[in-house]
Length: 482
DNA sequence: TTTTGAGTTGTTCGA
DNA sequence: GTCGAACAACTCAAA
Image (spheres, rainbow, N blue to C red):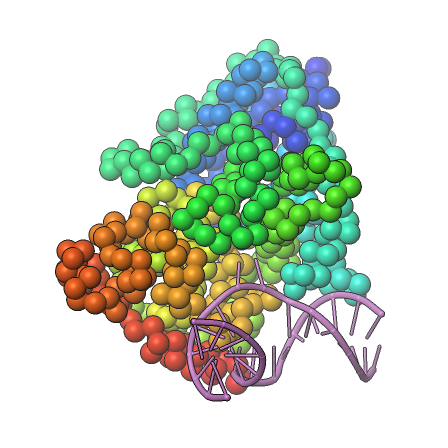
């Protein structure tokens, strides 16, 4: 019997730097497949924006496979059942895949692996998605790191992230007709109403666009990343997050490109401030996965137990105002509207809107995380959960409780020209810079000249920040006293 | 075992 | 207007 390897595109939707694909191709004929596995993922099935991206990622992956003589088989259902059906239909004797690390995914693949091996099927998994896999980096006492900086030092000390396999030039496909769902049947993209216009205008899913974006960033903006990354009105960040989330590009490729890009002049020169700051962000992604692995309840429960009984407010109207970008705080509203329109939000603004939800509105961080989960094209279980907990003060290495972002101050500091707010909150566009980030303090003459009546054309502030800050400090102090 | 140094991203107040 | 201190201890990691 001819050897045939089923290649499960479990997450890393790319052809280059894909060790499972490389090993499968080296072995002989390969049948690549993808499983839409909502039942396996349960509450953490991808949200609306992620599904939109997934459609494009799969289209692009299939096109790349066809260029190399194969095609992507699409199946829906629990992954274990899909794999069993494919084995029965093809007589394959091996299943290869790259690992993923959501708690539900780990539990699932443990079962699948055991089941395959008990039947004499070769089951092999590989690391494609992380520089260092969870469990690889531990403290001298053998415990998981809970503080970022020591984790980052250990990660750098490990090194060796340059080794990558290239995309296979050709894939030997089996001479079999294997049924595949039509992608359109999965309805990953919205019908009516079509809310994805902004996503289409801002993003191009796929491996080639991801590579292009990385190459441009590593040659250019990364140099000034340390300063420019904080300005949401400029293009100072990499915007690689959705590509990384879907594995259209991997962190090892990012690592190598950033090192190569900044070392052209002098290969021995240390990394510049921009490159170092950027790779630290890549390391935060690693740290988040590391935390999720060791603390699998992280998406549902605060890491710091004393927060379990925190008296979060219940205020559906306030939550809706926040979601819709109608809080009356321009930088907050701009961020949430950018998110709704493009499926993405600038990182600096993510912190501002998160601080506003958790500290100004005293709403549960899980409500914010759920909204991000549904609306972000880069929604990532580890980063999303870890970052929301960090802002809320209940996570590992968390923000001190007294750190409460002042939206007007943050706006003036990081969007001084108002370019970001004017773009996403156009009803305020004609206000002078000095009044833009705090319209409730604007002179009546400026409001009149801009044609704005607060409460009619733009909301009055949902809460008074100074008072809300006092309330948050008091509430968080109660936790601390316990 | 004990000690020591350090810890992503901020704001406000008063001199 | 600028600048440093206060905010509050606590936990983590490593020597």
